[in-house]
Length: 136
Length: 100
Image (cartoon, rainbow over all chains, first blue to last red):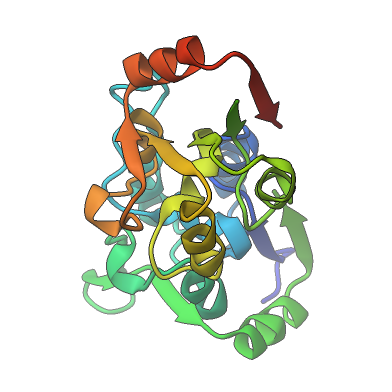
């Protein structure tokens, strides 16, 4: 890619509510999306918990920010890589995750899944391809 | 004594240290990111099953819900309590140790 476009990867390794990392990291991705870069996200370790479906914070008086992940597709952030081994260690599978999609403008705006389950070797290769990697 | 653990067992060793030092017969309440230890099928499940033979283990319901953890995914024997149950546990224990 030319024209000053760089490949960014945001690596998320924290659970959503115990610390502020997940929410702040998501905010940075959404702000960064305004700069028309080639952005992807990786969810590793406890970061996979951010994408757990069915989050309900009504009783705990916290902000449920999980619906915000649905907005990523509209900001052209549509490559969300989830490490398979991290899911398995936590007794989870793809079925436990939010159904996140985006409209592919190169394919008649067909709705496609944003979440891609990758194994550790695939994720390592993806990291090698990035220009900039930011961790949260 | 009531022990509380609020850190993810996958990220911190708070749960390990709690289980190593808590006397048999104690109560252990999992809350905040600590509730992830209560889920079936994880790499810490065996550790929790072992703990259930020595301790009464509880998990805070509102923190499970916030994290999208349905009660049918919990290890059998772990009791879900609300904030009122948390208060009862604290009030009926002579001391509380918070493993941060």
